[in-house]
Length: 251
Figure 1 (cartoon, one colour):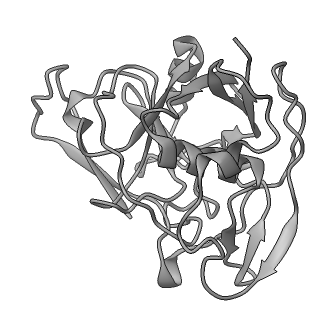
Figure 2 (figure 1 turned 180 degrees about the horizontal axis):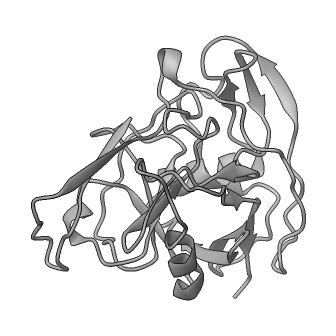
């Protein structure tokens, strides 16, 4: 996938002449798959705890879900209640807490939560088998641009990895403010597993990408996006999603 993002944009979305692109997300056919994360698992900080998730090999073939994976399936085993659904992303530079938007973006949130918890099957490209295993733990942020965003969720760490499937956009009234969590894509309806977290308001991205949450604290996000990179925006020192945990607190 290719995420094309104008750089040097004002808050109103007017852009300067410079631009940048990234290869992001897997896809169906030969591009999808990857090795996935290390499956570190662990306990959520209260409001759970989340379990370590399954570790199952389902075999080769087509997507076992038939392309349909629901929020009910993704949330199975979490405490019931009407409190906020959150993803806690632990990195070497600190902990980022993202409040997800399941009511507005049910499919996008189900996908992220399902991959995080090992509930949503994905294609392991090293074995050509579909597996149910925690996906994001141990992956790197493969593309970082200071004063813009950090992109991760690629099991290959190259910008070309993904879960072996794609799903449709969910464009809502959610907009790109500082700390936005959204899916990278290569055009309409090409979402997979790769995501980005913004450092600044990027109104020029509104309407083109599936926003599904908002993250804090900005101090950690700013430290993340300040990571030194090479000419291709790849960090000189790897920064990992050491673990991602899902919590849901009762009201």
